[in-house]
Length: 373
Ligand code: ADP
Image 1 (spheres, helix red, strand yellow):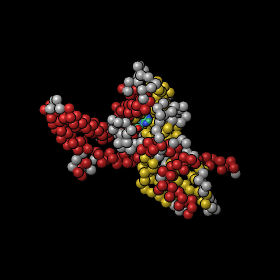
Image 2: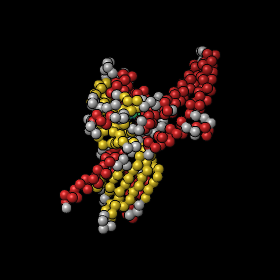
Image 3: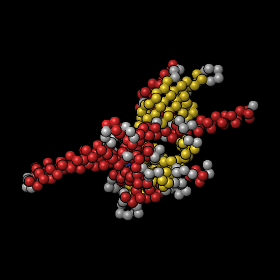
Image 4: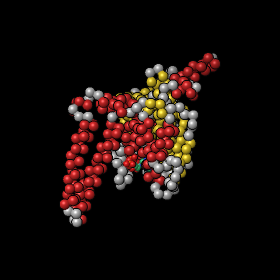
């Protein structure tokens, strides 16, 4: 009998492991009985009791659903919620159901989390690129144009005004403030515009290492030169191409490198780049299972306080005097439009003291074959 049952158990396990939705099974004592690879892809590899308790205390809505299930055996669902993870917020659909054995005994709670970020990305694509633009009669680029026009006038007027009072220190100072403010707003608009048109993203096979080297070059880190920062490259050279837009991905990694450089500061430091196949994360696209690769950027900076970490990926969150607080938000959006993920953790096993930013990207069509799967 045991032999007969074995393949079936294995089949169940394979089904469980192949689900794209994150599934966690919690015992009535709050222990994790089971978790599938999608749960680790969504929540990170350290899915343990401590991590789940922290997750639930950050997400009171989910804690309520789990408690209702564990205490009252109630089933509940939430069609669209924001799940606050350590480094990012994620739109999810959540379901919590009681786990019962064959004889109807209550064994715990099954928690299912369905990542809606891709769907939301597509909704945004539809809103930005589709008919809905015409609801207000204004596209994002149209709005940007309308804002930039008067800004040009303000900047010109401030320059003229400064010219009228060349020896008035205070007039020069105030005009300088106006011109700086205008430049700042123009930069912000440019940054938002650079990713507000998802239709501009190309879909080409790209060698991720070339993208990384170009971004390192733009950050002044490659080939290694005068910089006091050592770049460690732990690359898997056999990685297949990813599918995407090289220029947009270069912007993402350039932003991560600049943040790492700024976090390290003027002293010597290390940035570690690691690339590898994402062993567990798969996404079903039609009849095909798409595989992913992962890039990790770790630094030897001071890291972030838990309060700061909770605000990462929030628009306009910055700790820098001249920061925009948009770099990570826009980077996350670019990666989501590639159907990948970008999130952050404090450096763990890497031996470095700062932050690790992790990016998953789907491999280009046909890439699966190279890895024999
Ligand atoms: P900006 O660089 O303009 O501030 P970002 O969105 O790129 O905008 O970053 C937001 C904030 O996240 C930064 O101001 C900084 O506080 C924090 N941050 C980003 N990367 C790191 C890092 N590698 N180490 C520590 N803090 C970081």
